[in-house]
Length: 148
Image: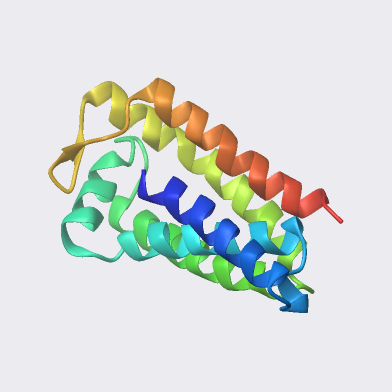
């Protein structure tokens, strides 16, 4: 739920900042870039934080090699993508890349839900709810990629 809160709160605060006169954030498109970037900072940092990292490693489907390396690489990609979202010249490309990354990582979420795994001591998000969240996150990235 923290990623959704980060996306919504980040976008809302960025939009309010734009309405208050910060030209760079004047509009929903730049506000959504900020919200999605914040979301990816939250999720990217989790790839390196103790119990969360262990849970993410456990989520990687067993057929994939080096789950620890995959979690590290995806965490770095999320953080680099978050920075890319904040740079107008790279925002569209970063959003497209992050949408593809989310689609590529979704099977790990499906696998974790089906196996009843926990993440930092809490059960992973149920598959139906996770699917809806994934659609929201991917749609936001696609909207940024193809937006104004």
